[in-house]
Image (cartoon, helix red, strand yellow):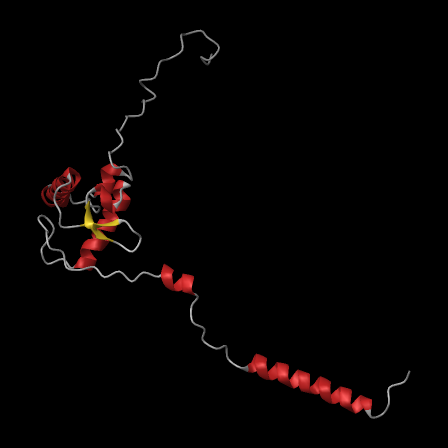
Length: 175
């Protein structure tokens, strides 16, 4: 069957219309889409209120500065906020768990952290700073290296202290 002369122009017009429509749609800039609900929930914009119980850190530090320092300490110690900060059972967060009371001094770990911070500041000010070639201050990570309790340092055996094979054995080179 041969297409009629009238159906050919109609088919060409329909095809041309589809091409024009597709080009028009594709040429438009993408519309801004609202983020998916899961994406909105995953973004947390935390406000860091001014600290209220600074005893060894400078009292001029902002909430953001204290938060950044605490994050460094967490990494250096392999710890989490609740290592030093007590939960407040009267203040429940959206996840159903108690929020932390950062001003509370009841955990002994917080007192230890203050003592260790004072120690590192003293070492840096009174000792490290007096060594001309010293460019790196002592930090929590200097000793802790990601562990809450620093790993004991074991001096590697020196090759001069290693036991030697007896003379005249196969492992002794002969001249």
